[in-house]
Every structure is written in C-alpha cells, then in structure tokens.
Amino acid sequence: MKKVSSKVERKIIEELNRISKKRGVHKSVIIREMLSEGIREYKLKEALELLRERKITIWRAAEMASVTYMEILDGLRQYNIPFPVTLEEIKREIKEINGN
Image 1: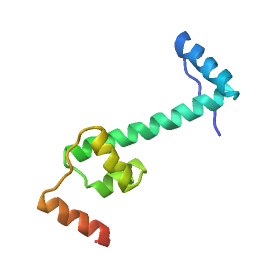
Image 2: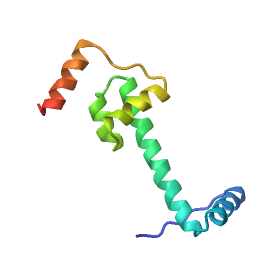
Image 3: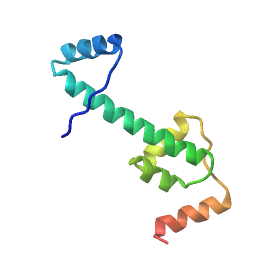
C-alpha cells in the first residue's frame, strides 16, 4: 500500500472520527473504504452515462464499471435510464455475448 495525503475540511475529519469510533476501527480503514466506494460509484456513473448516450453496450458498461450485468440493469433503474432496445443494439449485444 502507498500513502496519500490530502487536506480536508474539519467537518469531514470530525465525521471520520465519529464513524471510526462507532465502528471501532482506525480512521484510515474508513478512509480506504470510502475511497473504494467512491471510485466504484464514479465508474458506475461514468459507464451509465455512456450507456445513456448509447455509446457503449450494457455488457461493455458492466465491464467498464467492474460490475455484473444485473448490477448495470439495477443502475439503469436507479438512475432512470431507459434500456437500449434498438435492433442494432440488440445485434451488438448478441455479438458481444458470442465473443465476436
């Protein structure tokens, strides 16, 4: 593991301390968990936005976000993104599934 430093507002430090105390773990554990969760959420939103713009397929979005196909479908519902259903997109999905 490598060290990273950053300046943050006092309120954030206080909240980190509160969560750390409540969970009984060191503040660094909380920070690592929150960074990982934030990165995962960022990747998901990025993939969903490309999907909304119809620039990628659902399979590609799942791969980009490092989530399952079902998780991408959940993301579509959560962020109110319509399922891409054009004939061309269905053909592309089938090709990707078959590895072509």
